[in-house]
Length: 381
Image 1 (cartoon, one colour):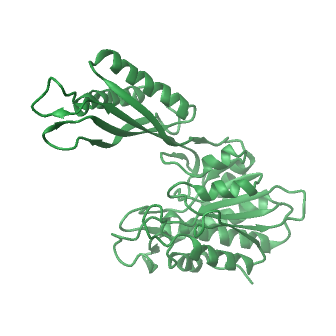
Image 2 (image 1 turned 180 degrees about the vertical axis):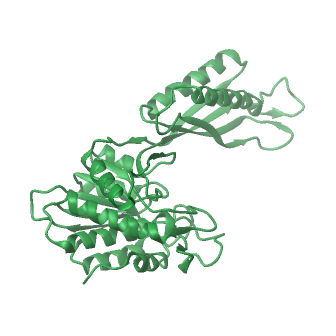
Image 3 (image 1 turned 90 degrees about the vertical axis):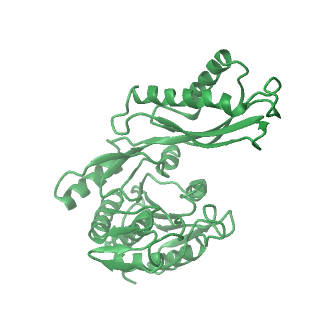
């Protein structure tokens, strides 16, 4: 069977509900869209593997085996989307207007999935390649990235391209993050007895001021050439029980966005120093610190073979050198890089990730498919 047009394929993908149930309880998950992708790729001669450690949360790996002696390339994109509630119109009814396709996931990131599937099929159909072409359609990127983690337990490649939306700009770095809970401890007492109570919320106020000062120091510090500096902010505050009681505790959840060269351990040392300073200068300041989820920042080698190959074909297709950029948000590139797979991010143009209106520029979808096709054929030759 011949390869499909990426616009028609994208419309089919958008029509399949794949809301991540870890974001929206009761969400459909990836089963339906994984079934469709598996059938589509199998019909084009790919060897299809379904990985499903968590029932109902499958990832799909489709392989076109090379003749041997060539480099293997993995194309990686996520099947899950954010929720449908609040979308302007029918989020599962793809609509084309003014050269754009509208619908949930068109931009983030079923456009990338459609382009990489079509490009892989086209490149393989051109003639025998020596290297393997691996198409990884993964679950759960919008929450915990369990899909790519599961794929990497069984599959590897000489290089990878993550087709997250990038406006047809070559993305070579992104920030990481680490979350912490700081629980400031007070002493509960009746509101009429300040002699007995210690106000945990008031003590936490000292920490919030120190957090803001920490953020200013980061902003004034050394900057990464593409990403700038790391950042920190308080994202959730819980404290107190009732108006007439001194609060015994106040919990602050904070997020520290990291740049290459920073790690969860180095950030925890910075945070511990801030808290230790408060413990020595603020009377009755007591706290407990708990580290939560963390993801590492990513930075590609600009001289890596996959970066040079894709950049060359992007320049050929665009008629100019592509923009080199970085993203402030985290992606699965970091997991691939940590697994020893050189990678970069390159995807469609459009707008509306996680928004009430979402669209992809269809011209960019065609251009992305063209660039990926030529990159696969060149890299895996």
